[in-house]
Image (cartoon, rainbow, N blue to C red):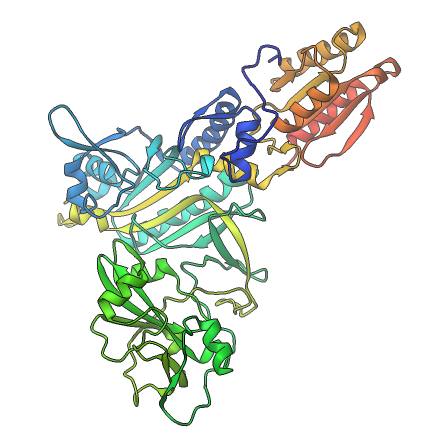
Length: 570
């Protein structure tokens, strides 16, 4: 392809509404254009990237034994009611009525549809196991679709679903998909961590996310990981031991003390000259429209996903000061356990507190010297604490590190969550009808491309891994009016084309600086520049990823390009 014919427009500046690197880079480099919030047009360069990601996915999924199909985007209300998710999925589900006043939804996921497919088409254990997958547009009405392709309202996803006759079969299918995913992302040039995660709205007993660990601030989740072993977990799922801390307040008498206008843990700690770890912190949430009081040690933070799972809640949010006053009759900052009439739970972190400080459910006072079993009954205990870096790895005991991660894939052991509710059954070897044992496996196609940009970029633009770059090489003649430069450029261009290499020739009558800037911004892996040194028989060979550059003969530049493209490097 010649640049003069390529449908691309690079921008001088980053878009003003972009907040993450991939959004900024992809818009400025002419890969995507926003139609409306969370909805993008994939321009020719981006579409080439996405098709390469899809090709890798298809090859590996087919090799794993999975079979491709294509399910409808539009899904009827009835199927979602069968599974029980129509009323609980939330506002992210895009719902609408057709002309016959029937309720429908644009599919954010396809568990219901694939369960219907299996119910209609699989009768016997002899047809199992089977894994069916598709690559399809998905739709979610995200409340804040402001991160480009990382969080859009329309996106491309590969989703697969396995059907087995037993839990052992599901575990085998799960492991096959885990290995397949590792190969897929490696072929895309991405190193991923398989991270224990929360199953969320999908459900199931076990789930993992495949995360690209990044050093930018655009990661969606904090990931705790161990450098000594393979352990990694989202903080919303991690179960770790707390670091040592003071848990005895040292007060010998249980009594009220005046704490005028002292409402925060920091203020209370400073005012009483105590460690935050001897304060029993009270947090009020509105859970499915009802107040719930959560007690947690003062130096720890609450993890909302854990809380949501413990309470089996559809929606929760932290209560406002007005709601705390309305439901508990006390000002925020002074909530305690005396005469509380709402549901109360506690994190395990409060269990060992002795002679601790706690709110008194009365403005401007706190209790000191409190003890469980004497002054207060210990609430029911759960793990709702946010794990922290430095805490011990649950596998090898080494201190955990923390970084941010971008989810590019996820796998779930669904079990019979959908098959039982939707009466999707098969006949086993004894002729007994049993529900399918299901697994679910997703890869964000557009998200994978965006994650690659988050991982590989510099101040000048994108550094595409060669495996998914829109073009593999760009040839830049510095002066298109120079006959010798153009002769060598065209000869190399034709040679690469004949070898099946995806090559761009920048034949535009532009300044060299403009061409170099566009090449770096777009992120083509190999650049061959033909300038004045061609009179000496030399061209400039440069790798975008590493920045390595050397002056070589045109034939050697050709061979170096082939060697690089055939190597295992990114």
